[in-house]
Image 1: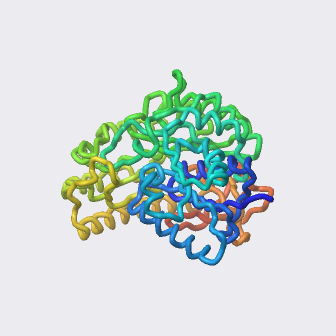
Image 2 (image 1 turned 180 degrees about the horizontal axis):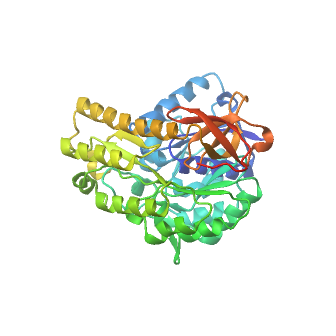
Image 3 (image 1 turned 90 degrees about the vertical axis):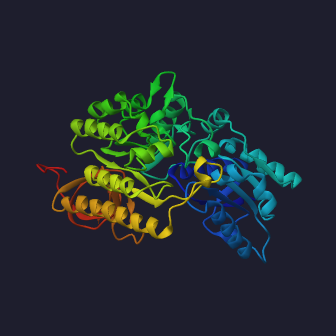
Amino acid sequence: MSQKIFIKTFGCQMNEYDSNRILDTVKKIGYEKTEKYEDANCYLLNTCHIRDKAKEKVYSEIGRVKKIFRFKKKPLVIIVGCVAQAENQEMLKREPFIDLVIGPQAYHKINDTILNYVEKKRKLEETEFDAVTKFEYLSKIKTKVEKVSSFLTIQEGCDKFCHFCVVPYTRGPEYSRPPSQILDEAKYLADNGVREITLLGQNVNAYESNGFRLSDLILSIEKLNEIKRVRYTTSHPKDMTNDLIEVYKSSNKLMPLVHLPVQSGSNRILKLMNRNHTIENYIETFNKLKEINSKIEFSSDFIIAYPGEENQDFEDTLNLIKKVKFINSYSYIFSPRPGTVSENLNLIDKKTSFERLEIIQNELFENQIQKNKSLENSIVEVLVENFTEDKTKTFGRSKHMTSVIFDGKKSDIGKIVQVKISKSNRSTLFGEIVDNSNQKVA
């Protein structure tokens, strides 16, 4: 009789990718996915340590699971991901309901760890860094493909050591997968219905394997006829090399949206963050890409009220946003992460922090609104991904990752169609499919 596993994922796209690979792995020992907590023999929580109160969210979630199973047989409870890596043994000590704690570089051990627990009932944490063995193991297990757009991890870890970030401690040093592994996985995805691949990494544009760089990967993947679009995330400004910038000239399938986290518009704050790039560097990259293609847009991440941020630093960030006109960006108030350099720095008062965040977000949201408004009455290329939740419309994304909802049919899924935009809001475009002959595409 098969066992049922419920997987809940917090955080980034890489965690989503990892959860899918974990599911593919545990199927080998008889687990099937369930969407219902109460039916699970195994509950797995894939955690993220980037945002505020990550650890507390894990224990809160476990508290909810305990209530659900108060009068039922307890499931095997597994915590994986970055909080698992950071807290390891402490989680087993603090919460007896947790059975296994497994870090991001030990997923290749998950089946043996589960089977060992079932046999011996011995709680265990597996948090050693072993990215090479992990990817060698996972490359032999095929991902179940159910989406038109899919993530593909090409790089993990970080050597940058930004003072606010836990990634070097939870994901380990930078490691780039061999290109043959990546291209084999891309071919498998393409053969099984995927039409858009997003290449993932904590520092994806730092990818390098025996001289083979991200630019080479992009050009290799786009040779797959079935793949219509290629994206990558998340990048570091320091690693926007000329070969990657130049690939925007030669690539036919690389999408014109660059997610390039700047974090602050102030050089003084960037130095305090240990970001190792300047605003001048950032603007130079921006200008180079705009010269190649004026339709390239930028999105970014912003940390507001970083310790030491003064009014002028904040104004510098606001001015950068006005200059670049970022779309689809993320912004949040600084919160200290355990173990980082910034953990014990003096925080800016909450009132000032929230006031600054509101001003920044209003500017970012206005950029999105105006960008989407400018597309009304124009025709946009959309990769159709699925039906909307209520099944009354079809859903896809533009080249700039903006959601587009329109009247479509099942046969459109997986295709690129032309949609005339009739209206918009901050996050979504609405329209209808049109005959694309003799039409100008935005």
